[in-house]
Length: 439
Image (cartoon, rainbow, N blue to C red; front, top):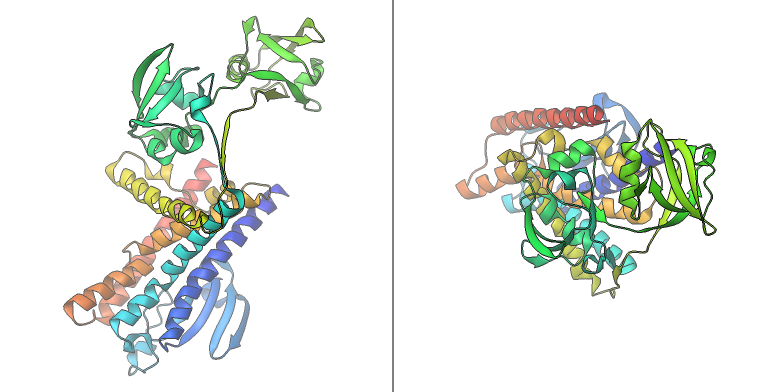
């Protein structure tokens, strides 16, 4: 059921974005009197269609191949590679008969709609949910490094003061934000009353992918008590009880959650003695850690200091706009890292499987719409890349036409479209294969 929920969310999210993107092209074409012959969600490869109907001279439908969608605009060389129409005399309602500036707007229509959708989604999320983050400046016990944090030199209890000289106030936004996770940032930390600097490796995203980590550290939390015991788990056999306070593992004190977690991981497939305090009495519970490095208890920890902000309707607009364009900024930086060799493409790029995992196996509307907003901006960026067969390729050729004062030849455009098509197929196969290998 969880897998079906995940697939359903992906199909719903991508369908919304594809329809709106293609609607941008459709409306722009219609506004300039250009005939649109087809409007399809997904591709009807080999002519196979799940659904179709005709309305006012345009065929609307759903294809079977969920890798995108398209509008077929009369008199235009596109992914359909239908060149027969181009052998006829140009008609006034065809794409090729219109001025270059009108054709440019038609090609930018989908990208413009994606940007508008991204801004609106982040605007509404800011208005509905506001901001909430952990107050890094008030973390009394500092941070607990994960495996990546330990590799770059962070120790349990370190307090991260600044990022590139700017105070790190919000933990998720500042400490684990794009400026740090893109690599190269300098962290000023406080350890045992002394300040020192740690430079984040430029290839940290490779490490994140290798370890399937979300970051390099988390706020350090004191444990309070056992909150839940899994049925049939080792903890149940060890006779843990809800409300027990864990004191030590094999004689090593475990005040903080990371200490307990590390000790359990150190004793995988080994006997373990866990001391607990129960009703004022110290008890020792004996058992064995299984291969998953767990014993089956959920722990209640001390509450973290939270920063929360709410925004009015109009006040949310610039907040949402800023968040939307940050997605594009991160994409640009990410591609820059790949081209410079700091990050491997197979570590950084994800396809449909990777996207599906981001949606998760349970419906969470905040996460769903956050991902839809992010993907809308990412699609706008990707479509603007100057690759033939993408909107950006058409835009590039139209700009060349406007500069030189005459259009590029149909023969050149046909060959460029074919090259772009094979580039996109290769990229799709790469990302899908990469997803499968990771999985």
